Length: 233
Image (cartoon, rainbow, N blue to C red; front, side, top):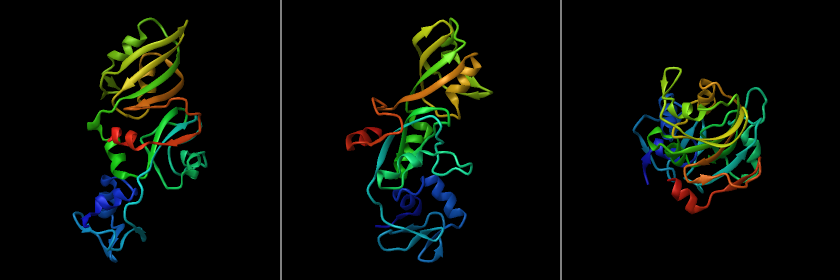
C-alpha cells in the first residue's frame, strides 16, 4: 500500500516524520533510483526506497524497551568522545532501537528506546504533555524550597509549566524530592533546582506517563508488553 515517504521511514523505525522531511529535502531519500520529493508516496513492499543508499524495507516488529539507565552513559547511539552509550546496554535486544527523549550523562533511571518512529514522535511531542517524575537528591535545602520550585514559571527567560514537588525525606540541609514535570526542556529539573539555590547530588527518573521504573536493576532493560505500549499510545 502506498504511503507518504515520511510515514514509510517512520514506520520502518528509521526516524520521526519530521526528521524524514529533512532527509527528503536534503536529497538523501530516493525512490526507485530517483531523488524523492516532499509529499511523494511509495509502497515499501514494491518500491525501492533508500536513505543514503541503504534500502528501507517494510515495517518490521514494533519494539519498545524500558531501560534503567545508569549514570555515566550518554543517551545516544554513538559518541565522538568515546563515552559509554545507552546503545551499549541494549545491543542484545535483537533490533536497532533509538532513545525516546534524553537523560543527561549524570542522570539515571527510566529511559524508553524504540524502533517505532511514530510512537517516538507521539511520546516526545509537546502537545501530549506526558508527566515525568524524578527523584532528586539535593543539598542546600531550606524551608520553603519545594514551594519555590513549584512557583517557578520561567527558566532563564524561557517559560515553563508549573511542576508538582513533594519532599520525600529530609535530613537537615539535604533532602530527597519528587519533582513531576510535563515538559522535557534541556536539563530542566537541574536548572529549576539551581534557580532555587539547590545543588543536585543525584537525579533519577522513576516514571514516565503510565510507566514506572519499578525494581529493574541499573543497566538492565525489559520489553514493554502490548498493553503497556497501547497505554502509551
